[in-house]
Length: 341
Image (tube, rainbow, N blue to C red; front, side, top):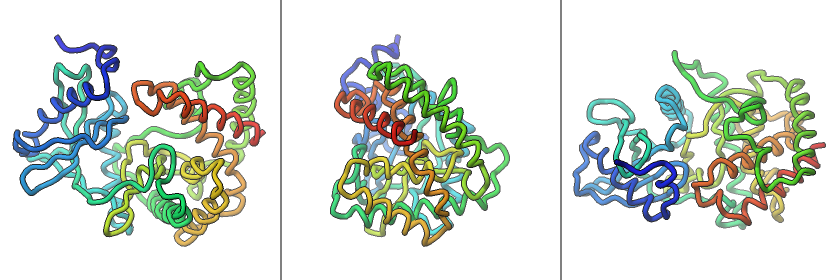
């Protein structure tokens, strides 16, 4: 009899890692990996990400978050990653199993849910930042410029790409951000919100819905987006910066992507330089009209709502349990609502 979901997530991070290692090793035969290969946790977050050292060959194995995406949604994510490779954009190569599929389903007693498991090429390097922003703030302008360039390249591609038959992903639209059942959860139920804050968010939500309706969803402003341009997903390698982790990719406004890294510059002494640099990088590859940029307060507010939802529904993840960080998100979102109103 395996662990229940409650028992599993009540374990320490170390015990969860050991459980996920059992599941990861069960997936080895699908890729012809030796059972004696070295397995090391790289990141325990929404997904469990491992380094696999099999003799001279090193790869990355990802144990996906349970129930986050259907198989069709995961196939669609990988199709976009494949298509982007011809767009002067570096992303990790997806490694198929020996039989051809790009991922497998694995179940073990140590983990309560069946998990999708996939494998990627190893890339030497490290993320330029984490959940809380950049590691090296002195290089902020350069990193934000690069983020803007990569963002514009993905938006150019998604606008011109004919979606494959059966392509399906979630949407960061009105319903996905603040509908009755938002994609990341009902942020207004967050226990750290006061009654006054809930009222402010509700008022801002009403105004946001009206503004989004006027802004519209034309191809020059809405389409397939990465939706997670945090600096943890910009990977600095000897060959340059690589964009990783398309787990949250879906349909949304381009300005939602723009707001994502800028959210983490709020309250810093480089926030103005960050905006200027990101816009400059973006405009090297794609038009970004001033009237779209004027909507930044709206999209910073929307991005903040999703992070508030995330801290409410991802309590099994360390960062979502960090009380001080969550208080910071609550305060930031309330400030953004006031600013937008």
